[in-house]
Length: 144
View 1 (spheres, rainbow, N blue to C red):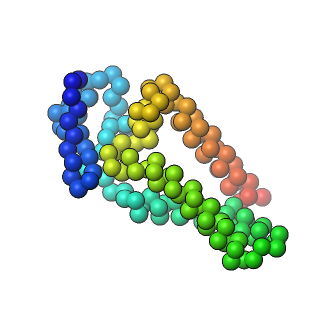
View 2: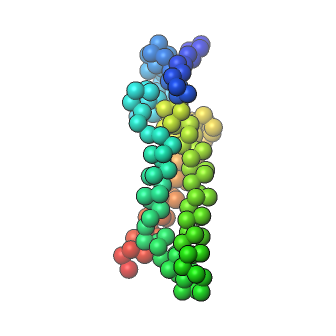
View 3: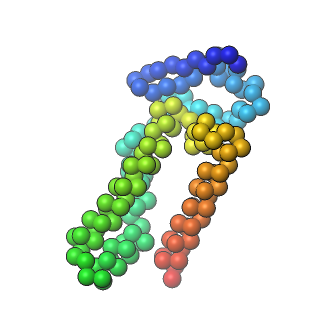
């Protein structure tokens, strides 16, 4: 593979059909990690933001706000603290998601670009541990 050609449409990028055909012959190619064409993309910055807002409205977040109220913090300030914390977390999530939205590549491929094929297993493992931890918190708070 000598040159990767890409096509831009409205600020979004995709690789050309010729380049995609050439990539399919690589041993590193995988249909699950293949870039999504522009016509198949439906997620926008708004979609990612609304997903995060939906995931933020959960029992542990509500419990955090009520716990702050129990400690003497005003109800409005408690809700504001939880909302501000979620907005602060939203910024790196949006930055991480931007490359997927713009270039149509999934996170594992983005991690390969940054850490290499073997090194990309580290962020994948960290994401899995974080997901297990957060699921445990949700199950413990919601179930008990």
